[in-house]
Length: 197
Image (cartoon, rainbow, N blue to C red):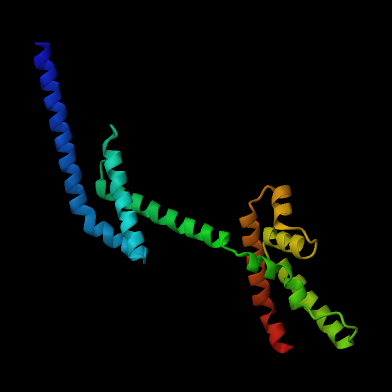
C-alpha cells in the first residue's frame, strides 16, 4: 500500500511539473512578441535588447520553481523587463563616469590656468583677469555644493582626487564626475564673456 501511495504521489508531482512546464511555455509564446517590442522600443542595440529579453525569460523560469505562483505573468514580465532596462542605463551611466581618461583629468587639472589670462603686468590683461575671476566666482556660487567644493579643492587648493576620496569617503569616480559637471557649467556660463573678448 505504501508503494501505491508513493507511486500516486510521484505521478501527481509529474503531472504538476508537466502542467507547470506547459503553462510556462504558453506564457513565453504568448508574451514573447509583445515583450520583445517593448524592450526594443527602449533599447536601440538589438543584441542588448535580445539579451534583456532572454534574461527576463530566464528569471521567469527561475520564479516558476518557487512555491509562490505568479498571478499575472504578463505584468510580472514587463516589470522585470523595466527593471533590467533601468539596470542597463545605470551601468552605462556609471561606465561613462569611470571612462574619464587620464588625459581628461590632466586637462582639467589646469582648467583655471588654461582659461585665465596670464599675469604679465599688462593693465588690460589684469582687468580682464579680474573680471573673469569675478564671473567664475559667480558661476561657482550657482553650482550644487558638492560640485563647487570639489572644483575648489582640486583647482585652488591643489588636492588630488585620491586625497579627496580618502578624506571624504566618496568614490574617486564620483568626485571626477562632480568636477566635470562644474567645468561644463563654467564653460557654459563663461561662453558669452569669452565671445566678447
